[in-house]
Image 1: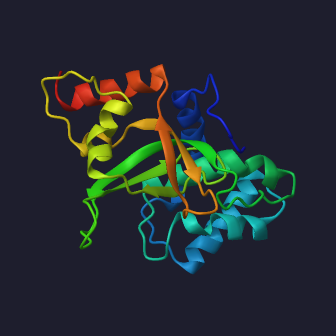
Image 2: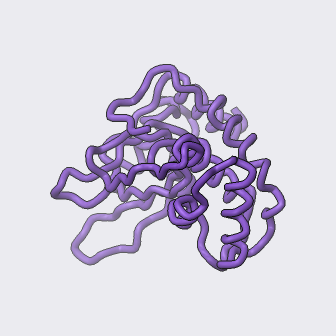
Length: 217
């Protein structure tokens, strides 16, 4: 589903519970090293267990979730679950999910998986690299990337849930594991990028609790 605006009433917990239920069906692949042969076997297993009519379309659409040589982990299977939960209805009907290349820009629920400093470039200000997994939408299960400025990255945790006043030092890496609505796309001039990020009150509460647990508050 393509969200042109952030929806109301979306429950991250309920969504992730459904993702986990789907991912459990493919635990037999956990720990294996991805290869062409393993991928082909996985595609056929997914098509059989999910009752999909078109394994060829599934094979082409799911390929970017894990690369050859990567170890298939619990996180990998969760990403597969996100993909299948989003695109399952299309495959079940014998169709293929429509392509989306960033236009019109769309909103996703994303979970931040890493925050690192970008490689310095002479003449440019320091930036960070924020990697996040799309929990839903046309890129469900895929890793999305943003490169905010130093100032933006420093303020990011407080934008999505960390209290603006806290005795604990807040750093960009505090955003890891937090969830938010993120708007990605291209406006025809800029390349594919994150355009906006925001969090609902329930997301902020969830993210605040994560921050508190890490800091023993």
